Amino acid sequence: MEKEVVEMLVNHYNRTGSKFILVKDIYELAEKLNVSPSALPQELKHLRQDNIVYVIKERTMGFWKIGLKRQFVDLLKVDGLNGS
Image 1 (cartoon, rainbow, N blue to C red):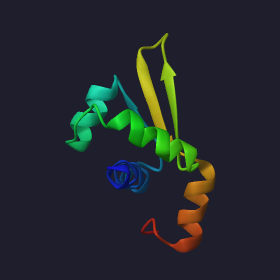
Image 2 (cartoon, rainbow, N blue to C red; image 1 turned 30 degrees about the vertical axis):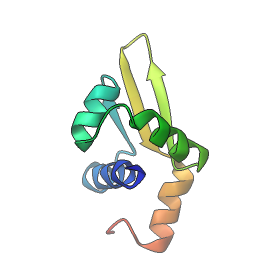
Image 3 (cartoon, rainbow, N blue to C red; image 1 turned 120 degrees about the vertical axis):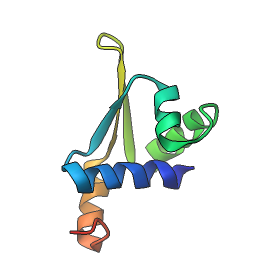
Image 4 (cartoon, rainbow, N blue to C red; image 1 turned 60 degrees about the horizontal axis):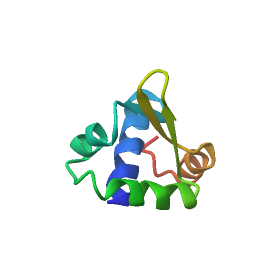
């Protein structure tokens, strides 16, 4: 499932140039990925530990900001994996 999260973010980056997406909650993210919401927190934790993504829970605005870390995007550019 970690792969699906990264692929979704990379595809979004390739389409829009934006390194992050905004979702209302874990359930909206699970719906976008077509996965069970119960597994997502652990998967996001692994991706955060591996310095691939960041997750910001914006309580005042009521959304989550989930994005690719700059270092990971730079690695994609160097390796030519982002389709550019």
